[in-house]
Structures are given as structure tokens and as C-alpha cells.
Image (cartoon, rainbow, N blue to C red; front, side):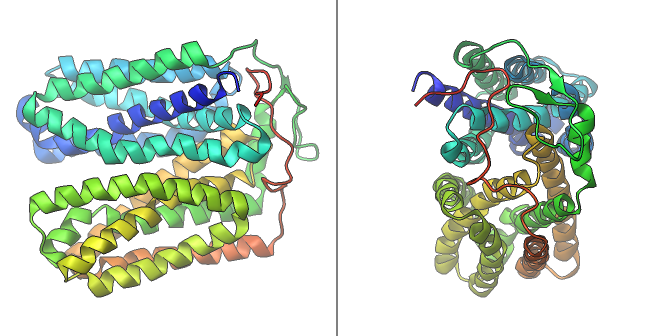
Length: 417
């Protein structure tokens, strides 16, 4: 199948590098605060500003990049991430590091949106979901290995070594994109209108045509479901250590091991949900928030007991991983005529969900205590289920993955298998 397999894996490696850059800083904030002479709260803004920029600029940055060659966009984004990590490793000025958190955040949603579309275009239509799942595996691997390894390197080899690791991964992925992704001249745009939404094969939709999808009520119900799903996930996961330490009574070292196990199981769960989506997208998307409600009820029941909760963490990781590919597949269903713009909406609004969930989770911890965190997540999951059910009542509105024509790569010839 020529270079399709390695090309998709390279995109997954790029996602791994980006997630390691985005989230790896969480584990080294104390070192940054100490080495750069800033308060812990100031250092914490390195995390907050990244998510805020992603949420605010994602769709517009992707829209502006939609007229460029995908290969150039992907390689350029990875080069920016590699450069930013090198700056982190070399600077002792917090203002410089802060600025180079904003810069890659501008490219984060662009890379994800273009990578997901490119992966789908590199394979036959019936394998598009599997290709997206492979790309998302980079996210789970980033949480499972990239973030812990960054923390380990900072602790044992110094802060600079941790950031040089991130720079190396992103540079390797950049070289892989340049070597493995096919490239042809960029296709011209076509004057897409709301009445003729699909661009002809080999042509890009116009900016106006891409923005036209924002007029669809169905799309906004899918967006609402994405926000609620991610809020359900991160209202509890964001306080993972808090829950296991203060409710379950695990030591800090055991919480670290639980985080690692959680991430490893996420890899397997990601593959499982990818297969389920291929078999029946509608049922899988509908069942996911209901499954999360049941999971949170279980976590609340077993929370105070270490042995059952250890097993519960593994189940939690498997379910948690599905939120990424399930939500993206659901939103993409309503944006098939503007896939990259639709994917950018997914990245931005999933970050909005993370922000909302984290805020509500923090409020619950400070007012009712960590013991009641699962009920906050369950509430968001029920809201997501309501949005999905309402969206289903409005009808398809767009062809499903099973019936949609295979999108052709706009900077690559059709893949062969």
C-alpha cells in the first residue's frame, strides 16, 4: 500500500510530539517556577494561555491555512513546535517562554485539523475512521508516555533535557512528514455555496463555503455535545490525583503509577472505540455519554476503597479514551463538506469543554469536596446525551461515514491498498 501506513503513523507521531509539548509542561511547573524565578501561579499560566489560544483561534487559523498545501502546513507546524521546545530549553527568561507558548498554540488546532483530514484521505473511505483513530493514538500515547517521560527527564537530567526531548520528537515528525507524505500542487478553491455544499473532487471549498456550515443548527448541537463530553471527561480527570489521594487514600507514588496505567489503557480503549465507530457510529456516539454516567456512578461507589478503585482506574482509562474519537467522528458528520474547518471547530470547542469542566470540577472540590466530583462529570455526560439525542431527532443532515463518498486528498493522489 505504498507509503500510506508510514505516513499515517508519522502524523500520529506528530500528535504525540504536540501533546507532549502542550501537556508535558504540567509535570515540570515546579521546576520552571524555581529555575526561572516566578511564582507557581504565574508558571501555571503556561498551561492556561495555551488552551485559551487554542480555543480562541483554532477555526480561524485553520480557515486561513486551508488554501495552503497540507504537507507544508503540517511540516511548518511541527517545525514551530520543535523550535518552541528548543527555546524553552535555552531560555532563562519567563517572558520569552510565555511568548513561545502562545506561538505553537496558534498552530496546534491547525495541525490537528489538517492531520485528521489528511489521514482520512490517505486510505480508502471504509478505513477513514481507523486512520483517525491511529492519529488520535498519538494523544493517548502522549498522556501515557510523553508527559511522564518529560517529568522524569526534568527530575533526573534537568529541565533543558526535558524540553530537548520534546524538540527532538517534533523535529523527527517534521522530517517524517517531508519524506513520507505525497505532495502535488495545491488545488484551487471552488465557489461553494450553501445550496451546493460539496466541493468537486480535487478542489478546495471557498472560505465562504466553509463558513457556511456555521449556519446549521444540527452542527451546533453536535458542537454542544462535544463541549459537554469533554467537560464530563475533564471535570473529574483534571483532579485525578486529588481524588485518588484524598478520597481513595493512595500515596503520591501510587497515584503516579495509576496515571501511567490510565494512559496505557487509554491506548487500548482508543482502538476499541475506533472499531465500534466503524461498525455503528450512531449507536456508539449515543452509548458513550450513557456509559460515562454509569462509570461515574461506579467510581463514586468504590472511591473510598483502594483495591476496587485500582480496577476502576483501568476501566476509567478505557472509557476516557473514547471521548476523543467519538466526539470528533460525531462533529465531522455535520462538516463533511468542510472537513478541516470542522476539525478545527472540534479542537477549539473540546478545549472549551476542558476549560468548563476543569472550572466546575474545581468549584466542586472547593465547596463540596473531591468525594462528589463524579457527580459533576455525570451531569455533563447527561447533558451530552441530551444533545446527541436531540441531534439524532433532526435527521442525518449530512451523509454518514458509511455512505459518504471518499474525500480525495487535496495535495496527494488517491491512496492505493
